[in-house]
Length: 208
Image (tube, rainbow, N blue to C red; front, side, top):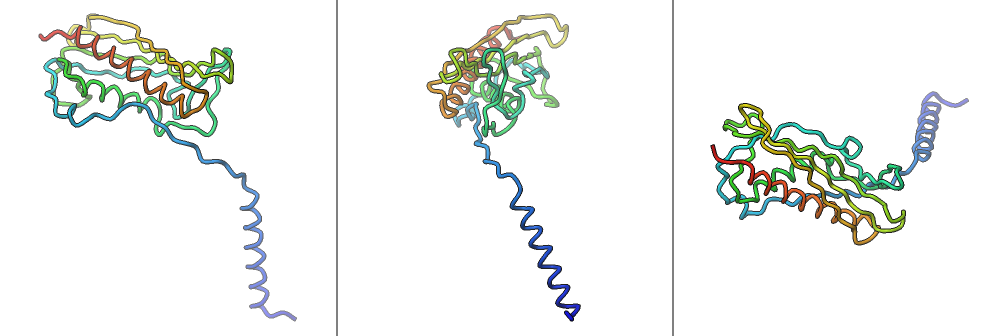
């Protein structure tokens, strides 16, 4: 006859064996590779005097399918996401950071004013990201075309009268059909479209 202590030891061993068997049956997933777009503000940009014309950037929309941390692709009208690849943060968040960095790095008259900041704004700027995706327009194995399309609208802060609106678009062909080549195409498209947005905002924001 086995002792109670021995029975308890056998029971613990059986439980451990069962748990180890359960763990071994769990599916193994490959870790996602993380990427980002948008350039950090340089030390020279931080030292640049702030603009004299305050512009408040209001809440806007970002293409819903691409707003998360996955890279959206379009092939023949079908949408899909790049496997095992993620942005380091949601694309909408990285976009917001890129917008702020672009204005901070510019020596023009416009100064972006954040919500809650104790400063007056003469204008309100809205940036709606309509498209933020990679198009496989030449077949699923060819380098895709990264498309970034943004609608900008600026109004007066007091009367809300429309000052100007414009659609900006950049199409950058990736150097290869690899993520390591597609991400730089996103980065270049964002940089170039924001450079045009900043220049347009500076042109339309007149000192009051």
